[in-house]
Amino acid sequence: MSGFAGPAPVIRLDRVTKVFDGSGRPTTAVRDVSLEARPGEMVLLLGPSGSGKTTLLTLIAGLAKPTAGSISLFGKSVGDYSTTELQSLRADRIGFIFQTFLLIDSLTAAENIEIVLRFSGRRRAERAGKTRALLRGLGIEHLADRFPRVMSQGEKQRVAIARAISNDAELLIADEPTGSLETRQAVGIIGLLHEQAERRKATVIVASHDLRLMEFADRTLRLKDGMME
Amino acid sequence: MYAIRTLRSQPLRLALTVGGIALCIVLMFFLLAVYRGVADGSVDYIRQNVADLWVLQQNATNILRGSSLLSEGQIDAIALTPGVRTAAPVLFLLSAIRKGDKVGTIFLTGFDPVLGLGGPPQLVRGRRPGADDEIVLDRSFARKFGFEAGQDVDLQGRRLKIVGISCGTNAFVIQYAFVTLRFARDLIGIPGLATCVLVNADPGAGLGPVREKILGRSPGLEAYDQATFLANNVREMRSGFLPLLYTVAVIGAIVLTAILSLLLSVNILERRKDFAILKTLGSPMAFLWGLVVKQAVLIASASCAAALAAFFPLVRVIERLSPEVSTKSTPGQIGGVMAAVLVMSLASSLVAIRRLRRIYFLEAFS
Image (cartoon, rainbow over all chains, first blue to last red; front, side):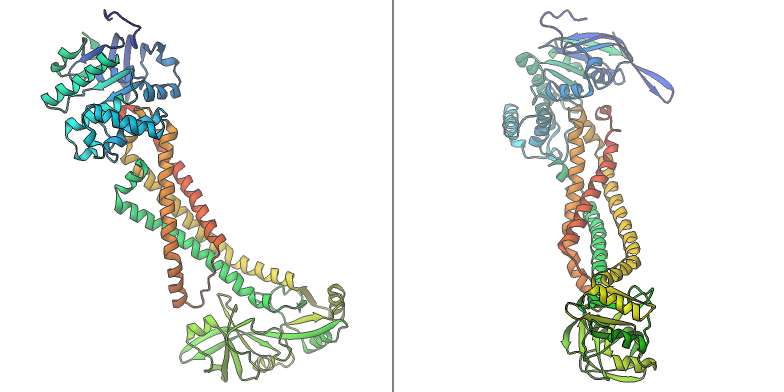
C-alpha cells in the first residue's frame, strides 16, 4: 500500500486477482495485487512484457472484472457501477493513452480529440474551443487538420495525450506511452504526463518496461508474473 | 464525419455497393412502372369507352381473360329492351398481322363505327377506321413492327390500310387493333356474332331496371355497370401480374438488404479496433449504433440518387428496344420505393449493429 499522504485515493485495489479462462486452460494474469493512488500522484507499474501490466490497467479502468479481490474507483466499488455509469466515468473522468497511440486514422487530429469530447456531452462550440486550446497548449496546433498517417510518432503521441486530457481526466491511464518513441520524444511525453499530475492533480498510472520513466514517477511498483514484487 | 470518412476511405467498394443497391432500386422502380403501365394500359380501353352497362355471356367477367359469345338474337333483344338508348356490339378476336417474315398477334376489336362505342380510346395519329379495309394499330405494336399510318398490312390474307395509331391500348402481353365490326365478323365467317354489347340507357330510365329487363329478356347473360366491369378487369390483370412482380421485387429487396448488411458488417469488422478504442474512451453504445445507421442511410441515399439518375434514361432505352413494354411512374411509386429502401437500410444496420456487441474493450489494448 502507498505511504503517500494526502486526499482520499482515486483508485484502490485490494488483493486483486485476474484469471483468464482460455480454452479450458486458466491463466493467471494478475495475482493478489493491492495498490492505491491519490490525486496528483504518478505511479509507475514497471515490469517486463507479459507481467500483467496491461491487465492491471484494464482492471483499474473498470474495463474488466477481477476474478477475486475488490477494486474501488473514485471511492466506489467498481462492481457497484452500472455499465452506463462506467461508460460515463470513462468519458468524463478517465483518460487513456496507448502504446501505439490508437488514433482513429480516418479523423484529423482535431477530430480525434473532438469525438471524445462528444462522449462527455460537450456542445459543438465548446468542443471546438477546447480542442484548439489543447492543441495550442501542447504546441501542436499546426497538426489540427492533419491525419495520423502523416504525423510522426511523437506527434501522434502528443495528439493522444491531448485526447486523453481533453475531458480534464482525474485519472490518466497510460499503457507503454513511450514504447514507440525515441528517448528525446519519450522524455517529452512523460514530462507532459508528470505535468498533469503536478499541475492538475490528476492521478497518473503508467504501465511500462522503460526504466527511464522511474525518475519521473512518485512511486514505482514492480510487477513480475502478475505479482507485485 | 467518422461515418462519411470511413465510407470514403474505400471509394471502389463504396462505388460498387452504391451501384449494386442502385440497380436493385432501379429494378423495383421498373417493376412498379411496368405494373402501373400494364394495369392502366390494359384497362384504358374500358375506362375510355364509357357505357352504362357492359353485357356479356354469363361467367365472363372481363374481356382479356374470359370467353363470351353473344348471338345476333341476343344482341337484337338487348337493343330492343325498353330503356336502352344505344346498344353497341363489339367483337374481340385474336388475330395475326404479317409484315414480311414477321408475325404479330393482336387483340382485334371490331366495333360499329356509326355507333362509335368500343373503338380506340385515344388516337395519337390519324383517325378511326370508317371502312372495312381500314385498321387502327396500337402505338407500341406499330413501333415494334415498324408500321406507320398510311401503310398497308396483311391480316389473314386481307389487305388493310392503317388509318390511325392508338394509345392506351397496350395490354403488355398483347396489343389492341381496331377494325369495323363487319370486317371482324366477316373474318370469322359467322354473321351477327359479338363478344359483348355496350349499352347506354335512356336518360331517367334507371340503370337497375334496365339491367333487370335485359337479363330477363336474355337468359344466360350478365350485365355490369362501368365501375364494376373496370374493377373486374383490373383485378384480372393484377392477379396475373402481381405475384410475379412481387416475387421479383422481394428478391430485389432481399439482395439490397444483404448487400448493405454485408458492407456494414465488413466495415465494422475492418474497423473493430476503432470501435474498441471508441468504447474504451467512453463512447455510449448509442453513438456507435448511430455511426452504423448513419452509414446505412448515407449509402441508401446515395443509391437512391444514383437510381433516380439512371432510371428514366434506362426506361427510355428499354421502351425504344421493346415498345410493347409500357411503363408509368408516379411520384408516389418513387417515394414509396425510396421509403422502403430507407426502411431496409435501417434493417441492414440492425443486422450489422449486432456485431458491435461482440467488440471488447481489451481489443484496444492488443
